Image (cartoon, rainbow, N blue to C red):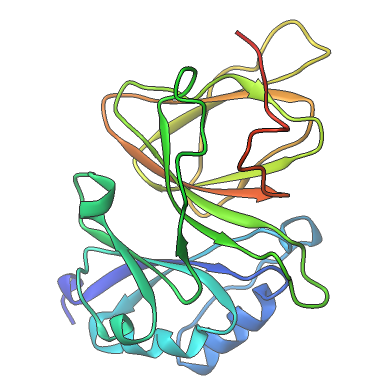
Length: 229
């Protein structure tokens, strides 16, 4: 089968459903190498290549995953089950589609427009998490080329960033330290964790970027955002 008959898929399991997602994918006939540690069980992502003819099988994951990002594919049988946001909505250059069974539109712009160039287009919010789950929220973060977020920190909020498209650099600095770390590139398939009391800033180069932001807990009114100029 030619390479153009395959698509790259990034899957974000629901909190505490990482092993269930691995098992479900294997039951669908997808071969995966499991490498799960306790540290990444709470927030993780999987990346696999799937034949286009088998893409509809992903409907079986609807109860255990939050997001499915499908690259180089604009329309599939997933449309019947999953809510969708396309590359056209995000104004990016490559074609990919992000699906979710539970997503709702974000009610407004979450960032401080005077300090940040980031825009937040989508959110999965669990006000009443099921037993054993953490009330986390997921947002899609869009950053234009040669732009940056505010440099800020949180007292209580933990944030995780996962790149879905483009290249994003992040700098971090504990608020008790003087010098920030060197800029690091966000890594595909890996959530980068930013702990409380750590000033952080994300920047793009000459291309736009889309990242998945996981907030624990969700802070839409920016009550736990403190800025460092």
